[in-house]
Image 1 (cartoon, rainbow, N blue to C red):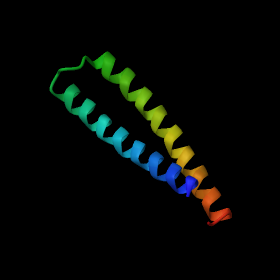
Image 2 (cartoon, one colour):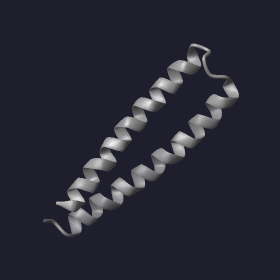
Image 3 (cartoon, helix red, strand yellow):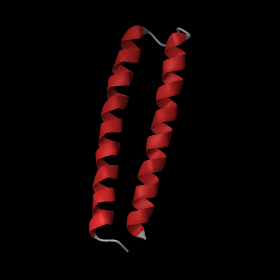
Length: 68
């Protein structure tokens, strides 16, 4: 159940990250965020997304190997 909880939490974080990316993109389109800052944020958020994606994939593989 702890693994399921971790997987659920990571999926929730990915969803929140996607929402944050969307809001930052909208802010950039509305000219609330400068191009340079948007680029920096977008790169950092993409890296975070890759980390979360890798973590989720790892947890899913562990779940397949060791079903509860």
